Length: 188
Image (cartoon, rainbow, N blue to C red; front, side):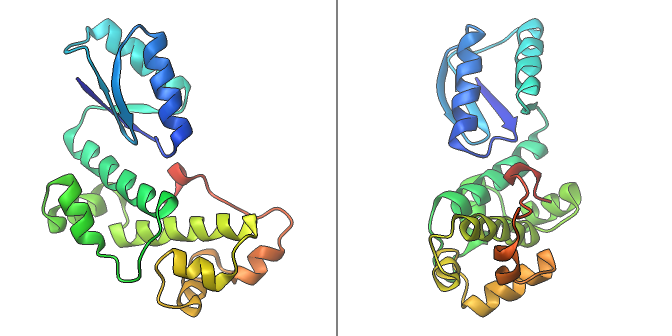
């Protein structure tokens, strides 16, 4: 049985969900961003309610609606690619998303926009800007290296997007004593 779970954005989330499922006496087969597969083929309403309560207490939410599941799958793909992989310039997001969610990109794009009140492209840009902030705070890469790692055509292009989203330049952001960052699952 597959449980679709909202707000799973990192390896720590995966470990927490897997641990909680085991504490509840369930048998996780695999847990990935947004999906936990358990060996049980069916859970009673009482068991599902208990799972929901435990997940909610940790900041997660089980999703039953198929359209919401697709949206979370799209978000998980974007988060994984931006925050855990290196992007190549010209990376084809529409192909990547449609091939992994098994739906036409146009349909997914319209569904995403209707349910999230922003486009997939806007969500991608906002996730990339959060990754830029993270990399600036770590102070291990310069802006050219950061722009290359995130698939931007140039540091200037990245800086322009950064300023458009945050209202400040990457240099100004770097000078802040306590940089303003948004948790990955709260990016909107």
